[in-house]
Amino acid sequence: MEFSARVTWQRAGQPFLDQRYSRVHAWSFDGGASVPASSSPLSVPVPMSDPAAVDPEEAVVAAASSCHMLFFLSIAAKRGHVIDSYEDQAAGRLDKDADGRAALVRIALRPRIAFAGQQPDAEEIAHIHHLAHEQCYVANSLRCPVVVEES
Image 1 (tube, rainbow, N blue to C red):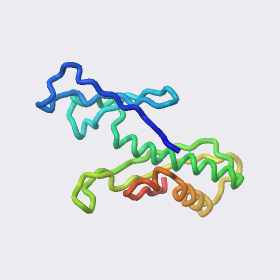
Image 2: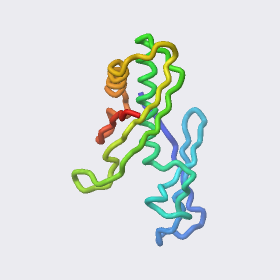
Image 3: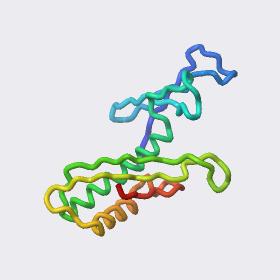
Image 4: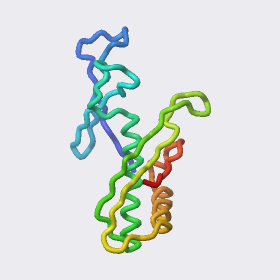
C-alpha cells in the first residue's frame, strides 16, 4: 500500500539567495483536498511564513492524533461502546533529540470522549487507548513517544 501527497511551491519572482522568500506552499491529496501549508512562524518569521497555514510539525501532531482516534473508535465499537464525540487537543514538543538535532521529542494526546449510555471504566478506556496506540501506523512510524494524557 502506498500513500501520496503533492507538495507545490513557486518562487514567483522573489529573491531567493538572501533567504527572504515565501515558504507558503500547498499540499494536495488524491481525494481532491488542497491544504495551504507553510513553515511555522516560530521557525521563519512572517511575512515569509503564513501563520494561518498548516506547518509540517502541526501536521505530524494532527496525523498522530487522527490515527490514534480512528483506531480508538474502531476498537471501542468492536468492544460494544458507543461514542458520541471525540475531541483531542494534541500537542507536540519541539526540542533537541539525543543527538542534539531539532526534533519532535514528544507528542501528547489529550482526548475528551463522550460515550452514549454506560461509560466504560477508566481501566477499559486505558486499555482501548493502549490497543489503539499499538495499532496506529503513525505512532509506529515516529521516533518520539506518543502518550495519552488524562484530561
